[in-house]
Amino acid sequence: MNDVSVLTSVHFGKRTPYFIPPTFLYRHIRGTTPHICQIVALSQITGFRFADWMNLFGFDLKLIFALQLRLHSERTATVTPSPFAPAAPDACVARCSSGCRIENERYLFAKIGSQDAVVYPRIHPGSIVRADRHYSRRVIDESDGEAPLWLVEHPGGLTCCYVKRVDDRHVILLPNRPPLSAWPLCLSSEVRILGQVDLELRPRNPGCIRPTSRATKSEFLTTLIQSDATSSTFSTLLRRSRARSGLTLRAAHEMTVQIATLLGNQEYGIALSLLSDYEAMNKVPRHVAKIMTLCIIYGMHFYELVRAGGIHIDDSDKAPLVFHDGKQPSRKAPAQSDFGNGPREIPAQGLTAAK
Image 1 (cartoon, rainbow, N blue to C red):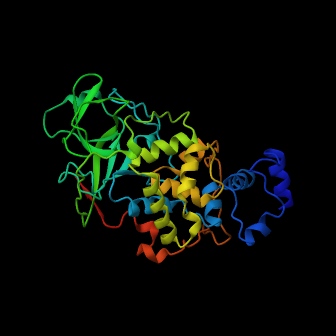
Image 2: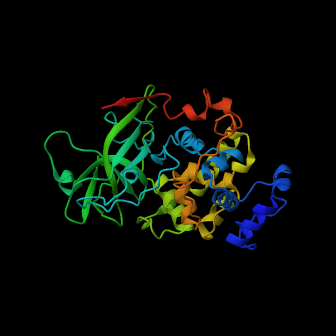
Image 3: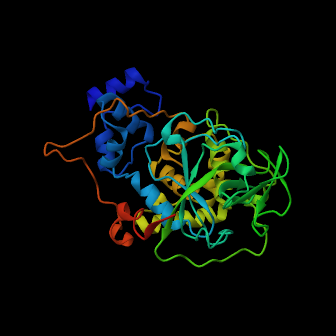
């Protein structure tokens, strides 16, 4: 640990959060959780993957997707099947191509909520839909055959619906019932088309539809928060993701309490005031558990969130961390029995492919 401490001091500096003191292991045994930057430093110095170091410290990134599926039920929200895939920037609305250059950036996934399943029975509440960001402008205007479905972002959150073009700048979201507006919306500022829905994973036991009787807005937004994945700050990404999830701060706090209860660890809970502070200060939380919770409630990729906070993680040139028996390290998550067969089986459990 003395050698590790010296290396982190040389590479990152003693006054940075990446510095690992010689007493690091002693503090960890005493219950002090490592800073995310310290885990990044361990990965960089040893040449082993960041995700494997996370597992050694008891943080399984695959839990993020499992809990996203479990907790998001009322409002349509994005989910992240792969915690390691880079998050894609939002597709520019109604242009010939979304401009995604990496295959992992092509698709966006969302779970349909019971309150905004406006195209039922074509899409069932609780279904997972895949939105293809590579779409053509003419697809929106085509009327032959069955109309395509689109995953769109509007001031009330996310919705899977039909889109009718009014002119080059305005579209109408169909069907015209809450939470969708009956008035034409301006592209980019009032509505953003995220992709064309081309796949649905339908639950074996579809949930009940609880339609809203009025239009819903996240914190009374009237316009969309502009997004630029290349320059988004940590606080901006949080505000935009919360608005996209259609959550108020109080609803988000209640969701963090559920996460802490399911995992049997209060470190995953986030106080209401702290959630507000995160959106005001442009700084990544010290505790890894808090970062994972933010990804769960707001439907974000873990790597996207930490990158917005200035922490860059690259496992492309890292080796897997294995023991002498050839097995990768893993730690059983607390309260795993609450998930039935285990949290890693949640994504496939209860879902069947639908045309």
